[in-house]
Amino acid sequence: MDLPHKSVVMVADGRKMLFLRNEGDAAFPNLVVEEAVEQENPATRDQATDSAGRASSPQGAAQSSVEPTDFHQIEEDRFAADAAELLKTRALKNDFDSLVIVAPPKTLGEMRKHYHKAVSSRLAGELAKDLTGHPIADIETALKNA
Image (cartoon, rainbow, N blue to C red; front, top):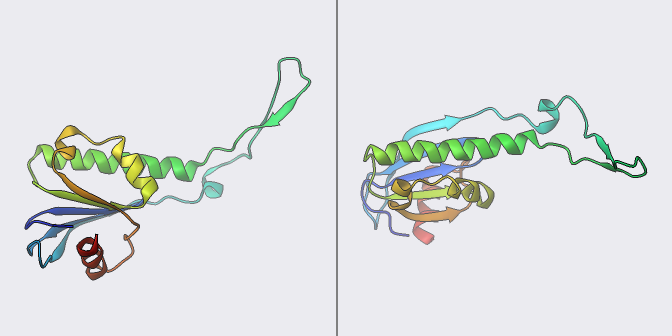
């Protein structure tokens, strides 16, 4: 994947976000950290107070269990929406001309729901991988090979 000079690369998952800027060129990227954001998101068992309930039919004859709420996933989805909002803010300030987003497929899908046209018009590529815990050299290699 080509990564022009001064492109922004966002590496994110459901609770971490890393903004990198390419200080190199397309052939030899040199990603430099601009900003790192991390949000606490405990497991659902640590956020929920009750177990799933049961629902009965109006006649009272049948009962079924209710799917438990996944608070952890709700927070990950909210974080993805917030990341897309942050991209919108930066795009509207003309902070970047070219953008590449690296995120796990589920997070990437949630972010896509919230892309603003200013972000979409600058989007040079997406990579559906979880690279948030990887060294920058690994991110550069993954982008070159994509």
